[in-house]
Image (cartoon, rainbow, N blue to C red; front, top):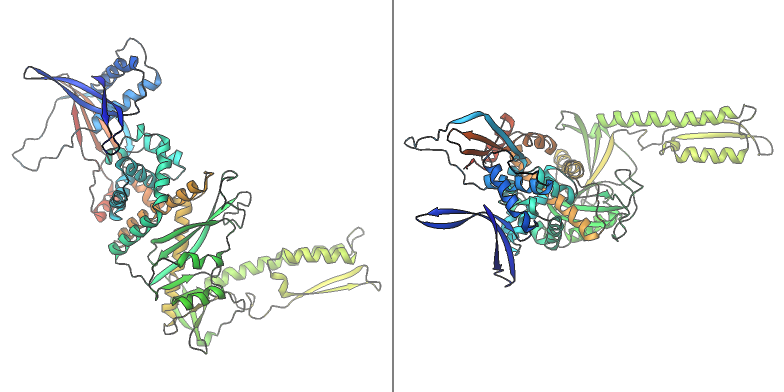
Length: 605
Protein backbone atom coordinates (compact mmCIF):
# COMPACT_ATOMS: atom_id res chain seq x y z
CA UNK A 1 0.00 0.00 0.00
CA UNK A 2 1.06 3.57 -0.57
CA UNK A 3 -0.40 7.08 -0.60
CA UNK A 4 -0.98 8.94 -3.84
CA UNK A 5 -1.82 12.58 -4.48
CA UNK A 6 -4.47 13.33 -7.07
CA UNK A 7 -5.23 16.75 -8.51
CA UNK A 8 -8.91 17.31 -9.27
CA UNK A 9 -11.44 20.09 -9.85
CA UNK A 10 -14.63 21.01 -8.08
CA UNK A 11 -17.44 20.40 -10.60
CA UNK A 12 -19.57 23.30 -9.41
CA UNK A 13 -16.90 25.98 -8.80
CA UNK A 14 -14.04 24.78 -11.01
CA UNK A 15 -11.65 25.10 -8.05
CA UNK A 16 -8.53 22.91 -8.36
CA UNK A 17 -7.44 21.01 -5.26
CA UNK A 18 -5.44 17.93 -4.22
CA UNK A 19 -6.90 14.82 -2.62
CA UNK A 20 -5.04 11.92 -1.03
CA UNK A 21 -5.78 8.25 -1.52
CA UNK A 22 -4.56 5.00 -0.03
CA UNK A 23 -3.94 2.66 -2.96
CA UNK A 24 -2.55 -0.80 -3.61
CA UNK A 25 -1.14 -2.41 -6.73
CA UNK A 26 -2.66 -5.55 -8.21
CA UNK A 27 -1.38 -7.57 -11.14
CA UNK A 28 -4.02 -8.77 -13.58
CA UNK A 29 -3.21 -10.48 -16.88
CA UNK A 30 0.32 -9.22 -17.04
CA UNK A 31 -0.73 -5.65 -16.20
CA UNK A 32 -0.47 -3.82 -12.91
CA UNK A 33 -3.52 -1.86 -11.78
CA UNK A 34 -3.75 0.70 -8.99
CA UNK A 35 -6.81 0.12 -6.81
CA UNK A 36 -8.03 2.82 -4.41
CA UNK A 37 -8.53 1.35 -0.94
CA UNK A 38 -9.51 4.56 0.86
CA UNK A 39 -10.10 8.18 -0.01
CA UNK A 40 -8.19 10.15 2.61
CA UNK A 41 -9.74 13.50 1.63
CA UNK A 42 -8.27 16.94 1.05
CA UNK A 43 -7.02 17.60 4.57
CA UNK A 44 -4.64 14.67 5.05
CA UNK A 45 -2.24 16.20 7.58
CA UNK A 46 0.72 13.78 7.61
CA UNK A 47 4.28 14.59 6.55
CA UNK A 48 5.21 12.81 3.29
CA UNK A 49 8.27 11.26 4.97
CA UNK A 50 5.91 9.38 7.34
CA UNK A 51 3.69 7.99 4.58
CA UNK A 52 5.64 4.69 4.08
CA UNK A 53 5.64 4.01 7.83
CA UNK A 54 1.92 4.75 8.11
CA UNK A 55 1.09 2.50 5.15
CA UNK A 56 3.17 -0.33 6.55
CA UNK A 57 1.42 -0.10 9.89
CA UNK A 58 -2.05 -0.02 8.24
CA UNK A 59 -1.19 -3.19 6.34
CA UNK A 60 0.08 -4.87 9.52
CA UNK A 61 -3.14 -4.09 11.34
CA UNK A 62 -5.27 -5.25 8.42
CA UNK A 63 -3.36 -8.55 8.38
CA UNK A 64 -3.69 -8.97 12.14
CA UNK A 65 0.06 -8.86 12.67
CA UNK A 66 2.00 -7.50 15.61
CA UNK A 67 4.06 -4.35 15.25
CA UNK A 68 7.13 -5.52 13.31
CA UNK A 69 8.43 -2.02 12.69
CA UNK A 70 11.89 -1.19 14.00
CA UNK A 71 10.57 1.56 16.29
CA UNK A 72 7.37 2.52 18.05
CA UNK A 73 5.14 4.87 16.04
CA UNK A 74 4.28 8.28 17.46
CA UNK A 75 0.79 8.26 19.05
CA UNK A 76 -0.68 10.39 16.24
CA UNK A 77 0.49 7.96 13.51
CA UNK A 78 -0.58 4.90 15.50
CA UNK A 79 -4.07 6.36 16.02
CA UNK A 80 -4.36 7.20 12.32
CA UNK A 81 -3.18 3.73 11.32
CA UNK A 82 -5.77 2.05 13.52
CA UNK A 83 -8.47 4.38 12.23
CA UNK A 84 -7.69 3.70 8.56
CA UNK A 85 -7.39 -0.05 9.16
CA UNK A 86 -10.82 0.06 10.76
CA UNK A 87 -12.22 1.98 7.79
CA UNK A 88 -10.88 -0.67 5.39
CA UNK A 89 -13.02 -3.21 7.21
CA UNK A 90 -16.04 -0.92 7.59
CA UNK A 91 -16.06 -0.17 3.85
CA UNK A 92 -15.97 -3.81 2.81
CA UNK A 93 -19.06 -5.00 0.88
CA UNK A 94 -22.05 -6.12 2.92
CA UNK A 95 -22.31 -9.91 3.00
CA UNK A 96 -25.87 -10.99 2.29
CA UNK A 97 -26.85 -14.25 4.00
CA UNK A 98 -27.56 -17.05 1.51
CA UNK A 99 -31.28 -17.41 0.83
CA UNK A 100 -30.88 -20.14 -1.74
CA UNK A 101 -30.19 -23.60 -0.29
CA UNK A 102 -28.04 -24.32 -3.33
CA UNK A 103 -25.60 -21.60 -2.23
CA UNK A 104 -23.02 -23.12 0.05
CA UNK A 105 -22.40 -21.39 3.38
CA UNK A 106 -18.98 -19.84 3.91
CA UNK A 107 -16.95 -22.07 6.26
CA UNK A 108 -13.34 -21.25 7.21
CA UNK A 109 -10.67 -22.77 9.43
CA UNK A 110 -9.50 -20.28 12.00
CA UNK A 111 -7.21 -20.24 15.02
CA UNK A 112 -9.59 -19.75 17.95
CA UNK A 113 -6.96 -18.20 20.23
CA UNK A 114 -6.28 -15.49 17.66
CA UNK A 115 -9.75 -13.94 18.11
CA UNK A 116 -9.71 -10.21 18.78
CA UNK A 117 -12.72 -7.93 19.20
CA UNK A 118 -11.93 -4.35 18.23
CA UNK A 119 -13.55 -0.98 17.51
CA UNK A 120 -16.78 -1.27 19.52
CA UNK A 121 -19.13 1.55 18.59
CA UNK A 122 -22.73 2.32 19.61
CA UNK A 123 -25.26 1.72 16.84
CA UNK A 124 -28.77 1.33 18.30
CA UNK A 125 -29.66 5.00 18.85
CA UNK A 126 -28.03 5.93 15.55
CA UNK A 127 -30.10 3.34 13.69
CA UNK A 128 -33.39 4.46 15.24
CA UNK A 129 -32.47 8.15 14.93
CA UNK A 130 -31.82 7.81 11.19
CA UNK A 131 -35.14 6.01 10.80
CA UNK A 132 -37.01 8.79 12.64
CA UNK A 133 -35.35 11.54 10.59
CA UNK A 134 -36.13 9.64 7.38
CA UNK A 135 -39.78 9.52 8.45
CA UNK A 136 -39.65 13.31 8.84
CA UNK A 137 -38.06 13.56 5.38
CA UNK A 138 -35.20 15.69 6.71
CA UNK A 139 -32.52 14.52 4.26
CA UNK A 140 -34.82 15.12 1.29
CA UNK A 141 -35.55 18.59 2.60
CA UNK A 142 -31.86 19.38 3.08
CA UNK A 143 -31.18 18.29 -0.50
CA UNK A 144 -33.99 20.46 -1.84
CA UNK A 145 -32.46 23.42 0.03
CA UNK A 146 -29.15 22.87 -1.78
CA UNK A 147 -27.22 21.56 1.23
CA UNK A 148 -24.46 19.22 0.06
CA UNK A 149 -23.74 15.73 1.33
CA UNK A 150 -20.88 16.57 3.72
CA UNK A 151 -22.98 19.19 5.48
CA UNK A 152 -26.02 16.88 5.49
CA UNK A 153 -23.93 14.34 7.39
CA UNK A 154 -22.87 17.00 9.91
CA UNK A 155 -26.51 18.01 10.44
CA UNK A 156 -27.53 14.38 11.03
CA UNK A 157 -24.60 13.98 13.38
CA UNK A 158 -25.63 17.02 15.40
CA UNK A 159 -29.26 15.95 15.76
CA UNK A 160 -28.64 12.28 16.51
CA UNK A 161 -25.80 13.21 18.84
CA UNK A 162 -28.26 15.34 20.80
CA UNK A 163 -30.61 12.34 20.99
CA UNK A 164 -27.88 9.96 22.12
CA UNK A 165 -25.56 11.97 24.34
CA UNK A 166 -26.76 15.53 24.89
CA UNK A 167 -24.05 18.15 25.15
CA UNK A 168 -22.28 20.96 23.37
CA UNK A 169 -21.18 20.83 19.74
CA UNK A 170 -17.68 19.98 20.99
CA UNK A 171 -19.03 17.05 23.02
CA UNK A 172 -21.07 15.82 20.03
CA UNK A 173 -18.00 16.05 17.78
CA UNK A 174 -16.00 13.89 20.21
CA UNK A 175 -18.85 11.38 20.50
CA UNK A 176 -19.12 11.02 16.71
CA UNK A 177 -15.37 10.50 16.36
CA UNK A 178 -14.75 8.11 19.24
CA UNK A 179 -17.94 6.33 20.32
CA UNK A 180 -20.52 6.22 17.55
CA UNK A 181 -21.02 4.05 14.46
CA UNK A 182 -23.18 6.70 12.79
CA UNK A 183 -20.42 7.42 10.28
CA UNK A 184 -20.56 3.80 9.09
CA UNK A 185 -24.32 3.93 8.62
CA UNK A 186 -24.19 7.06 6.43
CA UNK A 187 -20.74 6.44 4.86
CA UNK A 188 -19.04 9.43 6.48
CA UNK A 189 -15.68 9.63 8.22
CA UNK A 190 -16.45 11.78 11.25
CA UNK A 191 -13.00 11.09 12.69
CA UNK A 192 -11.48 13.31 10.01
CA UNK A 193 -14.21 15.98 10.14
CA UNK A 194 -13.04 19.32 11.59
CA UNK A 195 -14.85 20.75 14.61
CA UNK A 196 -15.80 23.86 12.62
CA UNK A 197 -18.08 21.67 10.48
CA UNK A 198 -20.29 21.07 13.52
CA UNK A 199 -20.76 24.79 14.02
CA UNK A 200 -21.39 25.38 10.32
CA UNK A 201 -24.09 22.72 10.47
CA UNK A 202 -25.80 24.72 13.20
CA UNK A 203 -25.57 27.86 11.03
CA UNK A 204 -27.08 26.03 8.05
CA UNK A 205 -30.04 24.80 10.09
CA UNK A 206 -30.69 28.25 11.47
CA UNK A 207 -30.57 29.79 7.99
CA UNK A 208 -33.39 27.49 6.85
CA UNK A 209 -35.24 27.32 10.17
CA UNK A 210 -38.72 28.23 8.91
CA UNK A 211 -38.62 25.84 5.95
CA UNK A 212 -37.27 22.94 8.01
CA UNK A 213 -39.75 23.38 10.89
CA UNK A 214 -42.70 23.65 8.51
CA UNK A 215 -41.55 20.60 6.54
CA UNK A 216 -41.00 18.41 9.62
CA UNK A 217 -44.38 19.31 11.09
CA UNK A 218 -46.14 18.71 7.77
CA UNK A 219 -44.55 15.24 7.52
CA UNK A 220 -45.51 14.44 11.11
CA UNK A 221 -49.06 15.61 10.40
CA UNK A 222 -49.28 13.28 7.40
CA UNK A 223 -47.56 10.41 9.18
CA UNK A 224 -49.86 10.45 12.21
CA UNK A 225 -52.94 12.01 10.59
CA UNK A 226 -52.85 14.95 13.00
CA UNK A 227 -55.90 17.18 13.18
CA UNK A 228 -55.03 20.86 13.09
CA UNK A 229 -57.53 21.80 15.76
CA UNK A 230 -55.39 22.09 18.86
CA UNK A 231 -52.44 24.40 19.46
CA UNK A 232 -50.47 24.29 22.71
CA UNK A 233 -48.27 27.21 23.67
CA UNK A 234 -45.80 27.63 26.52
CA UNK A 235 -42.32 28.96 27.28
CA UNK A 236 -39.27 27.82 29.18
CA UNK A 237 -35.85 29.33 29.72
CA UNK A 238 -32.29 28.07 29.69
CA UNK A 239 -29.22 29.47 31.38
CA UNK A 240 -25.65 30.14 30.23
CA UNK A 241 -22.35 28.85 31.51
CA UNK A 242 -20.52 32.16 31.05
CA UNK A 243 -21.42 35.81 30.74
CA UNK A 244 -23.04 35.58 27.25
CA UNK A 245 -21.60 39.04 26.54
CA UNK A 246 -22.16 38.70 22.76
CA UNK A 247 -25.82 37.66 23.02
CA UNK A 248 -28.18 40.69 23.11
CA UNK A 249 -31.15 38.51 24.14
CA UNK A 250 -29.34 37.12 27.17
CA UNK A 251 -30.78 38.77 30.27
CA UNK A 252 -31.36 38.02 33.90
CA UNK A 253 -34.89 37.07 34.80
CA UNK A 254 -36.94 34.45 36.62
CA UNK A 255 -35.06 31.17 36.17
CA UNK A 256 -37.17 28.02 36.26
CA UNK A 257 -34.01 26.19 37.33
CA UNK A 258 -33.39 28.81 40.07
CA UNK A 259 -30.12 29.82 38.36
CA UNK A 260 -30.41 33.50 39.26
CA UNK A 261 -26.63 33.74 39.02
CA UNK A 262 -26.70 33.22 35.23
CA UNK A 263 -28.08 35.15 32.26
CA UNK A 264 -31.03 33.49 30.49
CA UNK A 265 -32.75 33.19 27.13
CA UNK A 266 -36.36 32.05 26.71
CA UNK A 267 -37.61 29.43 24.25
CA UNK A 268 -41.21 29.64 23.08
CA UNK A 269 -42.87 26.61 21.48
CA UNK A 270 -46.12 26.24 19.59
CA UNK A 271 -47.12 22.58 19.49
CA UNK A 272 -49.80 20.37 18.05
CA UNK A 273 -52.03 18.43 20.40
CA UNK A 274 -49.90 15.32 19.79
CA UNK A 275 -46.78 17.15 20.99
CA UNK A 276 -45.06 17.89 17.66
CA UNK A 277 -43.44 21.30 17.39
CA UNK A 278 -45.02 23.63 14.84
CA UNK A 279 -42.88 26.66 15.54
CA UNK A 280 -40.10 27.72 17.91
CA UNK A 281 -38.60 31.08 18.67
CA UNK A 282 -35.92 32.58 20.88
CA UNK A 283 -36.92 35.43 23.22
CA UNK A 284 -35.05 37.58 25.70
CA UNK A 285 -34.28 36.00 29.05
CA UNK A 286 -36.53 38.47 30.84
CA UNK A 287 -39.40 38.14 28.33
CA UNK A 288 -42.89 38.63 29.78
CA UNK A 289 -44.86 35.50 28.89
CA UNK A 290 -48.11 37.31 28.30
CA UNK A 291 -46.56 39.54 25.59
CA UNK A 292 -45.25 36.74 23.36
CA UNK A 293 -48.47 35.04 22.21
CA UNK A 294 -49.37 37.26 19.26
CA UNK A 295 -45.88 37.20 17.72
CA UNK A 296 -45.75 33.40 17.99
CA UNK A 297 -49.17 32.59 16.52
CA UNK A 298 -49.11 35.14 13.71
CA UNK A 299 -47.95 33.72 10.38
CA UNK A 300 -48.32 30.05 11.36
CA UNK A 301 -51.13 29.47 8.88
CA UNK A 302 -53.17 27.74 11.56
CA UNK A 303 -56.83 27.17 10.91
CA UNK A 304 -58.99 30.12 12.08
CA UNK A 305 -60.96 27.61 14.14
CA UNK A 306 -57.88 26.20 15.87
CA UNK A 307 -58.20 25.70 19.61
CA UNK A 308 -55.42 27.42 21.59
CA UNK A 309 -54.56 25.93 25.00
CA UNK A 310 -52.27 27.81 27.38
CA UNK A 311 -51.61 28.32 31.07
CA UNK A 312 -52.48 31.26 33.28
CA UNK A 313 -49.14 33.01 32.81
CA UNK A 314 -50.05 33.79 29.18
CA UNK A 315 -53.86 33.92 29.44
CA UNK A 316 -54.23 37.63 30.14
CA UNK A 317 -57.48 39.39 29.33
CA UNK A 318 -55.72 41.20 26.48
CA UNK A 319 -54.53 37.92 24.94
CA UNK A 320 -57.98 36.34 25.20
CA UNK A 321 -59.51 39.40 23.52
CA UNK A 322 -56.93 39.12 20.73
CA UNK A 323 -57.71 35.41 20.24
CA UNK A 324 -61.41 36.20 19.90
CA UNK A 325 -60.74 38.92 17.30
CA UNK A 326 -58.53 36.55 15.28
CA UNK A 327 -61.19 33.84 15.31
CA UNK A 328 -59.31 31.41 17.56
CA UNK A 329 -61.09 29.23 20.05
CA UNK A 330 -59.42 28.98 23.44
CA UNK A 331 -59.15 26.87 26.57
CA UNK A 332 -56.98 28.46 29.25
CA UNK A 333 -56.24 28.50 32.95
CA UNK A 334 -58.17 31.36 34.51
CA UNK A 335 -56.18 34.09 36.24
CA UNK A 336 -59.03 34.94 38.64
CA UNK A 337 -58.00 34.76 42.28
CA UNK A 338 -61.43 34.13 43.79
CA UNK A 339 -62.14 30.42 44.21
CA UNK A 340 -65.62 28.93 44.23
CA UNK A 341 -67.11 25.47 43.99
CA UNK A 342 -70.60 24.03 44.47
CA UNK A 343 -70.28 20.30 44.98
CA UNK A 344 -74.03 19.75 44.47
CA UNK A 345 -73.75 21.10 40.90
CA UNK A 346 -70.62 19.08 40.05
CA UNK A 347 -70.09 15.84 38.13
CA UNK A 348 -67.40 13.23 38.72
CA UNK A 349 -64.80 11.82 36.29
CA UNK A 350 -61.62 9.78 36.64
CA UNK A 351 -58.20 10.83 35.35
CA UNK A 352 -55.61 8.48 33.84
CA UNK A 353 -54.31 7.60 37.30
CA UNK A 354 -57.77 6.49 38.44
CA UNK A 355 -58.21 9.51 40.72
CA UNK A 356 -61.63 11.15 41.02
CA UNK A 357 -62.16 14.76 39.94
CA UNK A 358 -65.26 16.89 40.55
CA UNK A 359 -66.17 19.38 37.79
CA UNK A 360 -68.66 22.26 37.89
CA UNK A 361 -69.52 24.04 34.63
CA UNK A 362 -70.90 27.60 34.59
CA UNK A 363 -71.82 29.33 31.32
CA UNK A 364 -71.42 33.10 31.29
CA UNK A 365 -74.63 35.09 30.90
CA UNK A 366 -73.59 36.30 27.43
CA UNK A 367 -73.31 32.64 26.28
CA UNK A 368 -69.85 33.40 24.82
CA UNK A 369 -67.67 31.84 27.50
CA UNK A 370 -67.75 29.01 30.00
CA UNK A 371 -65.89 28.50 33.27
CA UNK A 372 -65.05 25.04 34.55
CA UNK A 373 -64.33 24.84 38.26
CA UNK A 374 -62.33 21.69 39.06
CA UNK A 375 -61.78 20.06 42.44
CA UNK A 376 -59.07 17.46 42.91
CA UNK A 377 -58.86 15.59 46.20
CA UNK A 378 -55.16 14.90 45.68
CA UNK A 379 -54.52 18.57 44.96
CA UNK A 380 -56.54 19.48 48.06
CA UNK A 381 -54.37 17.23 50.24
CA UNK A 382 -51.24 18.83 48.81
CA UNK A 383 -52.52 22.39 49.30
CA UNK A 384 -53.72 21.63 52.84
CA UNK A 385 -50.26 20.29 53.69
CA UNK A 386 -48.67 23.43 52.24
CA UNK A 387 -51.07 25.65 54.18
CA UNK A 388 -50.34 23.80 57.41
CA UNK A 389 -46.60 24.17 56.89
CA UNK A 390 -46.82 27.88 56.07
CA UNK A 391 -49.14 28.55 59.02
CA UNK A 392 -46.87 26.72 61.42
CA UNK A 393 -43.84 28.71 60.21
CA UNK A 394 -45.73 32.03 60.35
CA UNK A 395 -47.07 31.44 63.85
CA UNK A 396 -43.66 30.28 65.10
CA UNK A 397 -42.09 33.54 63.94
CA UNK A 398 -44.86 35.58 65.58
CA UNK A 399 -44.45 33.58 68.79
CA UNK A 400 -40.72 34.29 68.84
CA UNK A 401 -41.46 37.98 68.48
CA UNK A 402 -44.08 37.79 71.25
CA UNK A 403 -41.72 35.93 73.60
CA UNK A 404 -39.17 38.70 73.18
CA UNK A 405 -41.60 41.19 74.70
CA UNK A 406 -41.26 39.49 78.11
CA UNK A 407 -37.48 39.04 78.02
CA UNK A 408 -35.12 41.61 79.54
CA UNK A 409 -33.22 42.28 76.34
CA UNK A 410 -35.98 41.43 73.91
CA UNK A 411 -37.08 43.95 71.30
CA UNK A 412 -40.04 46.04 72.50
CA UNK A 413 -39.83 49.23 70.44
CA UNK A 414 -43.03 49.66 68.44
CA UNK A 415 -41.28 50.81 65.30
CA UNK A 416 -38.89 47.84 65.27
CA UNK A 417 -41.70 45.39 66.04
CA UNK A 418 -43.68 46.78 63.11
CA UNK A 419 -40.64 46.33 60.82
CA UNK A 420 -40.18 42.72 61.91
CA UNK A 421 -43.84 41.92 61.45
CA UNK A 422 -43.61 43.40 57.96
CA UNK A 423 -40.68 41.13 57.08
CA UNK A 424 -42.48 38.08 58.50
CA UNK A 425 -45.53 38.86 56.37
CA UNK A 426 -43.34 39.35 53.30
CA UNK A 427 -41.87 35.86 53.73
CA UNK A 428 -45.17 34.21 54.59
CA UNK A 429 -46.08 33.24 50.97
CA UNK A 430 -49.44 34.97 51.32
CA UNK A 431 -50.49 33.12 54.46
CA UNK A 432 -50.50 36.36 56.53
CA UNK A 433 -53.75 37.47 54.86
CA UNK A 434 -55.60 34.83 56.91
CA UNK A 435 -54.44 36.26 60.26
CA UNK A 436 -55.64 39.19 62.34
CA UNK A 437 -52.89 40.63 64.57
CA UNK A 438 -53.62 42.61 67.75
CA UNK A 439 -50.77 44.82 69.04
CA UNK A 440 -51.08 46.53 72.42
CA UNK A 441 -48.67 49.40 73.21
CA UNK A 442 -48.04 51.61 76.23
CA UNK A 443 -49.75 54.98 76.64
CA UNK A 444 -47.05 56.75 74.63
CA UNK A 445 -47.25 54.16 71.83
CA UNK A 446 -43.48 53.71 71.88
CA UNK A 447 -43.30 50.20 73.40
CA UNK A 448 -45.25 47.08 72.56
CA UNK A 449 -46.69 45.32 75.59
CA UNK A 450 -48.37 42.32 73.91
CA UNK A 451 -48.81 40.68 70.53
CA UNK A 452 -51.65 38.24 69.82
CA UNK A 453 -53.13 36.82 66.66
CA UNK A 454 -56.17 34.97 65.43
CA UNK A 455 -56.59 32.94 62.23
CA UNK A 456 -59.49 34.10 60.06
CA UNK A 457 -59.56 32.31 56.68
CA UNK A 458 -60.53 34.57 53.78
CA UNK A 459 -63.45 33.20 51.77
CA UNK A 460 -62.75 32.08 48.21
CA UNK A 461 -59.07 31.38 48.85
CA UNK A 462 -56.91 28.27 49.10
CA UNK A 463 -57.72 28.18 52.82
CA UNK A 464 -61.46 27.71 52.23
CA UNK A 465 -61.36 25.98 48.82
CA UNK A 466 -58.25 23.77 48.70
CA UNK A 467 -57.80 21.74 45.52
CA UNK A 468 -59.93 24.05 43.36
CA UNK A 469 -58.79 25.64 40.09
CA UNK A 470 -60.66 27.24 37.20
CA UNK A 471 -60.55 26.88 33.41
CA UNK A 472 -62.20 29.28 30.96
CA UNK A 473 -63.07 28.51 27.37
CA UNK A 474 -65.00 29.64 24.33
CA UNK A 475 -66.39 26.09 23.94
CA UNK A 476 -69.72 26.63 25.69
CA UNK A 477 -71.30 23.53 24.10
CA UNK A 478 -68.69 21.09 25.41
CA UNK A 479 -69.51 19.06 28.48
CA UNK A 480 -67.40 19.04 31.64
CA UNK A 481 -65.38 15.95 30.78
CA UNK A 482 -64.49 17.10 27.26
CA UNK A 483 -63.29 20.46 28.54
CA UNK A 484 -61.11 18.94 31.24
CA UNK A 485 -59.62 16.16 29.11
CA UNK A 486 -58.77 18.63 26.35
CA UNK A 487 -57.08 20.92 28.85
CA UNK A 488 -55.07 17.99 30.24
CA UNK A 489 -53.08 18.09 26.98
CA UNK A 490 -51.28 21.09 28.47
CA UNK A 491 -49.91 18.92 31.25
CA UNK A 492 -48.36 16.76 28.53
CA UNK A 493 -46.55 19.89 27.35
CA UNK A 494 -44.73 19.92 30.67
CA UNK A 495 -43.26 16.54 29.73
CA UNK A 496 -42.14 18.06 26.41
CA UNK A 497 -40.12 20.71 28.19
CA UNK A 498 -38.85 18.13 30.66
CA UNK A 499 -37.63 16.04 27.72
CA UNK A 500 -36.01 19.05 26.04
CA UNK A 501 -34.25 20.19 29.21
CA UNK A 502 -33.18 16.95 30.84
CA UNK A 503 -33.21 14.26 28.13
CA UNK A 504 -32.04 16.31 25.13
CA UNK A 505 -29.62 18.83 26.61
CA UNK A 506 -31.42 22.14 26.24
CA UNK A 507 -29.64 23.33 29.39
CA UNK A 508 -27.12 24.78 29.82
CA UNK A 509 -25.89 26.82 26.82
CA UNK A 510 -22.14 27.25 26.36
CA UNK A 511 -22.16 29.56 23.32
CA UNK A 512 -21.54 33.29 23.37
CA UNK A 513 -22.91 34.37 19.97
CA UNK A 514 -26.67 34.72 19.62
CA UNK A 515 -26.88 32.82 16.30
CA UNK A 516 -25.05 29.86 17.83
CA UNK A 517 -27.33 29.97 20.87
CA UNK A 518 -30.38 29.91 18.60
CA UNK A 519 -28.82 27.09 16.58
CA UNK A 520 -28.17 25.05 19.72
CA UNK A 521 -31.83 25.34 20.74
CA UNK A 522 -33.02 24.51 17.21
CA UNK A 523 -30.93 21.31 17.15
CA UNK A 524 -32.56 20.30 20.44
CA UNK A 525 -36.03 20.97 19.02
CA UNK A 526 -35.30 18.86 15.90
CA UNK A 527 -33.92 16.06 18.08
CA UNK A 528 -37.16 16.23 20.07
CA UNK A 529 -39.19 15.94 16.85
CA UNK A 530 -37.33 12.73 15.98
CA UNK A 531 -37.81 11.38 19.51
CA UNK A 532 -41.52 12.21 19.29
CA UNK A 533 -41.83 10.18 16.05
CA UNK A 534 -40.33 7.14 17.78
CA UNK A 535 -42.43 7.52 20.93
CA UNK A 536 -45.68 7.99 19.01
CA UNK A 537 -45.06 4.84 16.97
CA UNK A 538 -44.17 2.84 20.08
CA UNK A 539 -47.12 4.30 22.00
CA UNK A 540 -49.52 2.74 19.50
CA UNK A 541 -48.16 -0.68 20.54
CA UNK A 542 -48.40 -0.02 24.26
CA UNK A 543 -44.82 1.14 24.97
CA UNK A 544 -45.16 4.34 27.04
CA UNK A 545 -41.51 4.65 28.12
CA UNK A 546 -39.71 7.98 28.38
CA UNK A 547 -36.85 8.73 26.01
CA UNK A 548 -34.35 8.25 28.86
CA UNK A 549 -35.61 4.68 29.29
CA UNK A 550 -35.65 4.00 25.55
CA UNK A 551 -32.14 5.40 25.21
CA UNK A 552 -30.82 2.95 27.80
CA UNK A 553 -32.31 0.07 25.82
CA UNK A 554 -30.90 1.32 22.50
CA UNK A 555 -27.42 2.07 23.87
CA UNK A 556 -26.72 -1.59 24.63
CA UNK A 557 -26.27 -2.61 20.99
CA UNK A 558 -22.75 -2.25 19.61
CA UNK A 559 -21.02 -2.69 16.31
CA UNK A 560 -17.83 -4.76 16.69
CA UNK A 561 -15.07 -6.17 14.47
CA UNK A 562 -14.01 -9.80 15.10
CA UNK A 563 -10.54 -10.63 13.73
CA UNK A 564 -9.23 -14.20 13.21
CA UNK A 565 -6.06 -15.80 11.87
CA UNK A 566 -6.89 -18.46 9.26
CA UNK A 567 -5.09 -21.76 8.77
CA UNK A 568 -3.97 -20.64 5.30
CA UNK A 569 -2.17 -17.62 6.80
CA UNK A 570 -4.75 -15.01 5.85
CA UNK A 571 -6.55 -12.71 8.27
CA UNK A 572 -10.34 -12.66 8.40
CA UNK A 573 -12.14 -9.53 9.62
CA UNK A 574 -15.89 -9.64 10.27
CA UNK A 575 -17.68 -6.48 11.35
CA UNK A 576 -21.29 -6.71 12.48
CA UNK A 577 -23.69 -5.52 15.15
CA UNK A 578 -24.33 -7.45 18.34
CA UNK A 579 -27.59 -9.37 18.52
CA UNK A 580 -30.52 -7.22 19.62
CA UNK A 581 -31.82 -8.20 23.06
CA UNK A 582 -35.50 -8.81 23.77
CA UNK A 583 -36.65 -5.24 24.49
CA UNK A 584 -34.59 -3.80 21.66
CA UNK A 585 -35.82 -6.46 19.23
CA UNK A 586 -39.42 -5.52 20.01
CA UNK A 587 -38.68 -1.85 19.29
CA UNK A 588 -37.11 -2.77 15.94
CA UNK A 589 -40.08 -4.97 15.06
CA UNK A 590 -42.58 -2.21 15.86
CA UNK A 591 -40.63 0.31 13.78
CA UNK A 592 -40.19 -2.23 10.98
CA UNK A 593 -36.42 -1.80 10.68
CA UNK A 594 -33.53 -4.26 10.62
CA UNK A 595 -32.29 -5.67 13.90
CA UNK A 596 -28.75 -5.81 12.44
CA UNK A 597 -27.91 -2.19 11.52
CA UNK A 598 -25.02 -1.86 9.10
CA UNK A 599 -25.22 -5.51 8.03
CA UNK A 600 -22.26 -7.90 8.09
CA UNK A 601 -19.01 -6.93 6.38
CA UNK A 602 -16.15 -9.32 5.63
CA UNK A 603 -12.57 -8.57 4.64
CA UNK A 604 -9.83 -11.15 4.05
CA UNK A 605 -6.22 -9.97 3.94
